[in-house]
Length: 381
Image 1 (cartoon, rainbow, N blue to C red):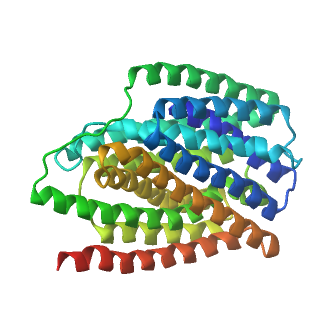
Image 2 (image 1 turned 120 degrees about the horizontal axis):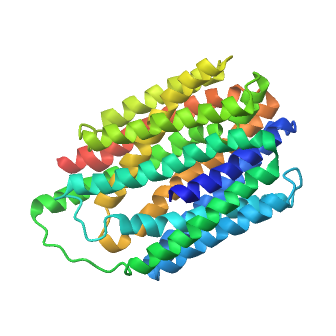
């Protein structure tokens, strides 16, 4: 998974930064990014459903092959032309197909209610692997960008081919996911009901969190160019953001204070809203880093907790489908965020989208409080 994200985010950086330096309008950056996010969401839902109904290994390998196809098409195309967009958005379909079956395999046969630590250990290895891949891809892309697109896309293609070979090797070692029967006590039934509620709450949190997070991927290049941050430093900022996210994963793996605690999630969302305000006022790389740090902890919190609850709140054979929904809520938040942010950036300026994201984040937090009261608090009575 690390190689897939390394390859994919080299392309994402190259396309978004290239369009920003070509003086593309903010609304167009939003459309380009939203299309990628939406294609990833469609791919995740479809990939999760197909993996649930059929052999997930075929879906997994199809995703790896689609990533290669997209990298080649983007490398041969021109990002300023409209026909380039389907080639770029194919990357989202590939990533969407790749991850749900893989997530379904992570804790196959493991009961999340009796083995919290075992489930968490597997999830942390997965999360660190793909984040290191993403972080490395953004860092390398920032350095390669000045060398030209041939180098940038060439490295991405090389790594995506390696990823396909590794995917084939992995698929040959994994049996199809089957139904697992587990003896359940009354306590386990209660724990499952609570996990299902928090799984749904995490999907709501994903929408708000990635509404703001999407702007880092697709609209931050516009702000970075506007305040004079070079491509190399831009790549370092994104890599630092990933370090914060990985650190959040590690803390959540080590400690259990956040398990089934809405107040912890709300505190994380408030800090992220402050981070978005800081980004909106940034005039230097240092202030951008502070804002990204505050936002990054939420991205890490939402992803790890959502994956944990999707595992704990789903039967073994339906975990791929739950993972697909988890990924698709992230992608939908990204798609809506980039479209709305891009439109506001064109109408007003490149800073306003981050203020909107802070407002949306707080609105979604309020919805979570209402949902928690109905799904969890009332259910205890």
